[in-house]
Length: 389
Image (tube, rainbow, N blue to C red):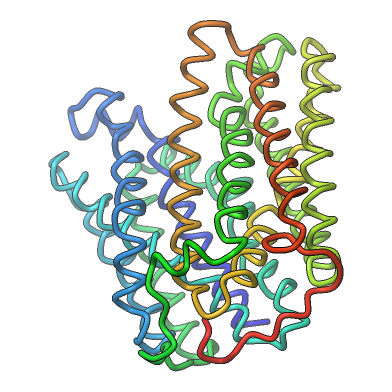
């Protein structure tokens, strides 16, 4: 458990590092003497770093011992968050953010497979649920706390705190996280072979459609909740979402190893029902918060479910497949920003749920047709070889 929680802490630092600038834009822009729109590109630079680097870095480090790769990613956060905290020039800051994004991309491709190696096959899904808990914790608690800290004592101290946490995490990993050999050269699968493995493209398609639906609303939740009278309580909305997501992770951890396919289907259907609720009761604050809580509940276990399905399906190509997952996930975040912005400008925030329902319908259809490869029925019976992840 101590080792799995160290992986969860790595995920927490990934998410907190990514999202900190969004909550600190006014202070950051004033201090660096730039516009807030340019300051917002610090988030973009981080995302681009993850997208560009994750697959080549994952392939390049396949043969490395796993703990060395993990320590490399955490060391990257230490160095590049420190550089961000000390930088007085936007170009240097953007480069530091891009490099921090590269570290995050490698970390995300590593964490799921690492967690799976620590436990027997029948507990792999539960182990991944623990390892993924850092994401909703960061979203629900870490980001508001970092924003408060930054507005109280300065944005630089918030990034410095990320560096201090990285130092502590390095010591934690060395003390508690077991080491494993990298993948033998004979067992490594090329990118194209992994991509054409039956079921891999189905899972990635569900990642894209599900995360597009999620991020259209999450990215533009502030304008969406205005009709419900929650314009000044976006912090409460995100807190409700984040706490519900924590519950979702706990529930998913109990179900993923026995009912992966069924849990994915129930999560998507429940998300769709919550989306319908947002259409019907859009002007009602309490109903909106209830629907958002249900949405958070269904989202909490999404990473665990999708990464488990992808790793099971890819077998010895799991590390490469999980790096593709990072690209699909972050691509969906970027795509949702563009799609949501277009919907907001043309038809207003009320159009979001309709687009989300179309995407969720597509995801459910893909899951339905992937019953034999990708999202199989019954208890997970995969036996992952030690060299596989």
